[in-house]
Length: 197
Length: 417
Image 1 (cartoon, rainbow over the protein chains, first blue to last red):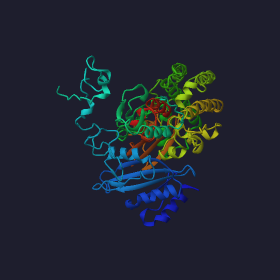
Image 2 (image 1 turned 135 degrees about the vertical axis):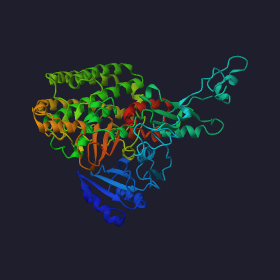
Image 3 (image 1 turned 180 degrees about the vertical axis):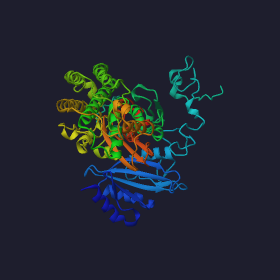
Image 4 (image 1 turned 120 degrees about the horizontal axis):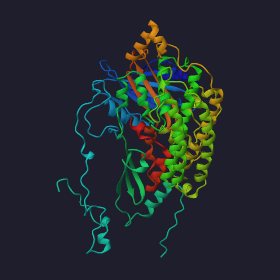
């Protein structure tokens, strides 16, 4: 079984939802024209065609074109050793594609990364947070309109810690007076020191 | 009376279930959140994991990566293909040579010149990859053993790594930041007498493998810490996209060098070691055996190494001889264009994955023509291998985290890019 044969099976099944397979540099690419059926297509690719390994998922910014973004899925099957690439075009206004986390669990971090770097959101992802940049970072650095030198932004508070408490913290025993069960740090509720004291 | 309880359940998930059942009621305490990393000796860099604990059993693990993010992919879009080679050194900085090779192979596939690379160059690249694999596995093994309490192995393996660094220094001029490959070839040929030094090293290193293995493989403490710890099945491994020894440890016999041979791997006679259970101990065994297979491959390379050019003879891809640049017009133009604008590559897109020490290092490159890529995505094996942690860690004890992390053998430079 070759990649092109598997790809033809996929296009035969889904007809208008995807383009005819294109072959270049020894690799087969299918463009999914109807993103709403993406999950269905991926489930078919995994279940029926045996593409059980999602090698990579990434987003490309074709700045100045419409639709602006492109999400690229590299699929592989351990049973037939064939590779297949799926591509979905994403317009700038919605910038959303359905998440394939229900098909391959490895899509979790890949989708978070694509969101973090390119600002494409994945509908249905249970925990779509930034992964490489910190929470609350305002830009999407891999977009073409983001300058190479970067933009100034505020550092998150978590980068700085308060001074360690000498006593009263959750892990510090205070000596004297009470019996051991009372002195035991875990028996107390933690007194969290605020930054101004 | 009779408060002592023997715990005999081997399976960690069952153990946790047992704990949760038996401790319900008044013994059920509050869960505690423990922060591990980003600077913790067992996290091998700057990985941070937030662990939610019930007693000493992990109920939830949230890895936090990105502390070492340098924006390599953004940088790549702003420079020529050859200029990015030094950045690949800094991905998996324990095996820079293997990254160099994987990257240029991807670019060559995109340019469509992968079948024109001279044979000698291909052999040299295989030597680079396998030397890097031994070096990376030696470190991974030493650090893993030290994390679970066996200090001596670390000293043993580092003695050998030092010799590898001497070899790499003689070959490339640098010990860590090798930047050895170029699109269409390598920076320079093997220095004189280098192959003899390499074969002498190979004879020494196999002795060291045996010594290290004797310290660990049948060591009861090591076995207690690693057997039946961090188990995931072949299905889980594939579902989470695990690659390299972490995949083969679970019994999937898959190796890109064998299943999709690049360079001259199809001429090499070697085996793919696989595990059976998919625990930390299996992954350790796979790595040990992989190093032995690498030695076999290196010996075959030394035997078969042909003479000839190490660079593609095409002025559009590799720099012409200096002598010709100074005397001939055409070569001067090639030199000028290559240095100022870079290798001109036709529009297209390509994905190439290579079997690196940590797993499948892949490059997705999209070109719109010209000397710089439009998009270069690095599929980092460490990044994907770490994504199994939230699924794998719950049910383990805190001390098992160290063994699991050591056995996954990741590098944050590559994970965070």
